[in-house]
Image 1 (spheres, rainbow, N blue to C red):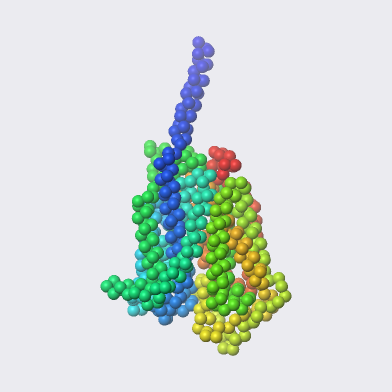
Image 2 (tube, helix red, strand yellow):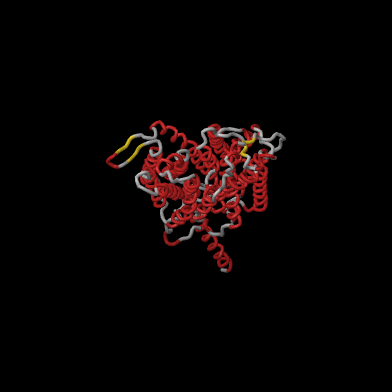
Length: 528
């Protein structure tokens, strides 16, 4: 009798254990082939959305100034600065909002609405010539709305983070960044093709549409946006898998019976979240400085004309774009062997070396541009000019000069005592920064998504996108103030200091940059 009583607790314990195993087996359902294909078709739609977002920025960037001068002669170079910055400002505002929306509603809603805003904004851009006055403000509004629509990148990245397992995450994030890079590369290519239409182009009088080299690119972008909306309705589906790749209910819908997802239990490491936001800001800030400073630096150091500087640096930046796409593909394999944290550390070191090489080391001074002092006019930088790419401002100043002066302007006092940066230094730095930036970009997004784990990532991805947009705004400000007034030695020394600070932050939080499932003991660190 006593023996039977002793067996009863054991039997109950065995039954409870069996029940837990059955529940776990229910959670470990292998993903069906149909679900797998649908999930990856949806991810490919996200790749397309990211590509179109970057094309929307770059497809008109080279033609904004001449189009602005054509539609509104009252616009000056300082207003151009606000137009260029408005895209990043719009994206910075919209990213957290769309991210919040995607946390509580099906992601199709913010994706379609944001893309529709971009389509409408592109159409508005094509009609900014119609009003009889204040045309420049219509253009400003159009570009800000295009940027606002581009805030959907937060939704894209949060979806990809939730629809991929840890082993798939790095590859998917790399593909996303590669699509973004290809968009930035192809945007100016599309613009170049549309220049064949010419400034006059074709006028469709019934709808007051001028189809020319300025409006054709944005209308093409609007067409791509419409296609994207159709594909989103036709192909995109809500999918979610946990860190191990098991199919889960979407976070955007209530779970049946109010059952909580056990994998989502636990707190996010907000120290790690803040640290990655800071690192991402630094990464995009130094790259924004790099691409902004390219034209004025080469004009000052090598006496290149504006046309030469824009042409050669365009080739260099295109080559860096191709290099970035290759790096995005290679890093997917490399991360499986070394881990994301080590690659991020290595990428920051490469960027540090790239800017360190740019420091003036020689004795030869750059050629001095004396012509500018003849008019006794020292260019003044207004606050609105600080938010535009400095190469654009310099180009605007020089475009009115038929006999364009070359060399380092005497109005920049540092030209008289700062050694020149040799072309070999510049090219070497380009290669290194072009290698380090894409590595850091992908690893930041990947680590960030893994730290957040199964928690809703929309708002968090929105803040990460907003920090990147803020960095792209502040980069030109840094160049227009530090480089112009203090020179390359101060500018690149400060950049090196910022990168060293980011390396110290990375060292401090290194052990905290682990996947949510690893932190809460659900997976081994080797699996991430």
